[in-house]
Image (cartoon, rainbow, N blue to C red; front, top):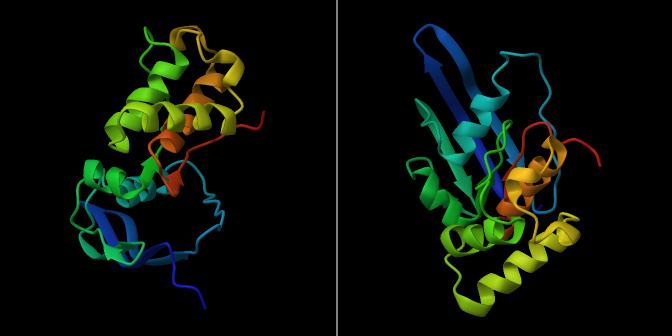
Length: 169
């Protein structure tokens, strides 16, 4: 059996009396696609926060690509390859779509010069946004802003992306 790319082992998170996750274990292998389904308030967003480092677990352990990431902050996890998109996209509205991706490649993946340009262009293609590269991000509709969120995670070189409510094209 292949070792998991992402593993949560007995993760617990509480906010006072409200239990977000209790002894949660999850394994995601390389290339797996996993959907998390549940009603409002079930803890889906909090789970993504635990994985991305926006929330710290009260107990348990998270590993990514064989490395323990439980106590690492979200910026460090991002550099390791864990990306996250948000339900409400917040692109840099005065920058073009391509410039948004260039920032992701340079700041998220730490790429410079040509490598960052290539990563941004590849993310544009993978997200199906090449024809919108020079459009200011502020002019995008909601669906295209969500695509841009995904493209930014891809430009950051992430091998693990947590995405909320990704609508079909």
